[in-house]
Image (tube, rainbow, N blue to C red):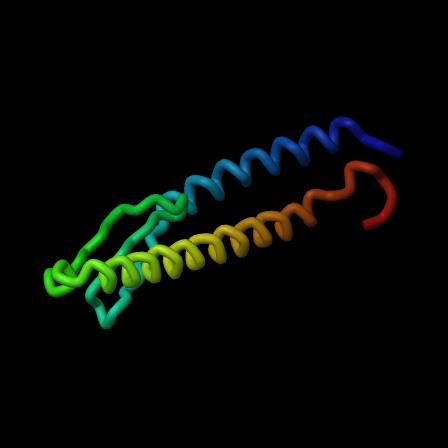
Length: 106
């Protein structure tokens, strides 16, 4: 049988876990280096750039600088996305212990 009280508790728990997850993700920092360390880029868990270090030797070669920046941005974004997916899957997995709001067996 469908239990609205249990469903409400489950949704409340999901919302709390979602807010906690967002906060945890925002506090993490992901850093990458490209070109043997010529470019260092750091993003937070929301995908926002928090630091960028560019070696002066790259400033004379615009094409190389662009390629290194694109590579660093793509690599850092992949790291952030993978962590977001892993964290979301972990959160969903932990919801399994909240019971079945629709009654019956698990």
